[in-house]
Length: 236
Image 1 (cartoon, rainbow, N blue to C red):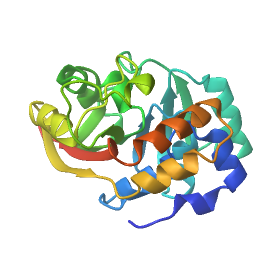
Image 2: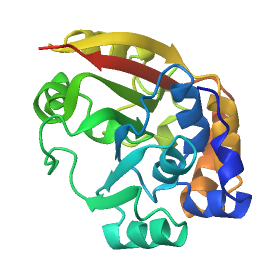
Image 3: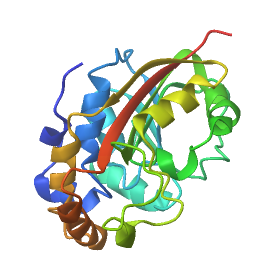
């Protein structure tokens, strides 16, 4: 399905609610590769301020559970109500390794610019996430990463590198997902929206965007990428 979620919200609203590279661009590129069922039940995992959750409901017709650890559920619920989406999007405050949902609750799990914080091991998928998907359900992830692996952090990147960033190459993620029992990896690709998504984030007044602006100017397209991964839960 081809859709431009940025048309759903004012530019000001997008800049106020982004928490990283424009999540709407990443979401749309992922969903061009997926046939969403009508009224799909979606878990938006690591939803931030709920921008992708609102797009999934308003633009794609999904019923969405918007889960995040850092943003209070009351704040997101207020945003959803103001957007007229209280009946389509439910805000939940939870930790990714303690998800409070019943088995097979979702048709698809989406995670944009959050996956690297909690899912850099195969045990997360098999233990915490797969049980929540119906058989044949999909997992669609957009995650920041590296164009190439390096043995040591390059000197010019070191001032911006934080231990535990969990930035990996596409091949690293692909190999990890291929080890997961119960999953079929459908696609693993570098996302074409990477440059635009970052450029739009850097227009924000967010203090993290201001720091990232210096980093991305230095990086000049040499190190970073945005990876897309889509997999399907096997019928057990």
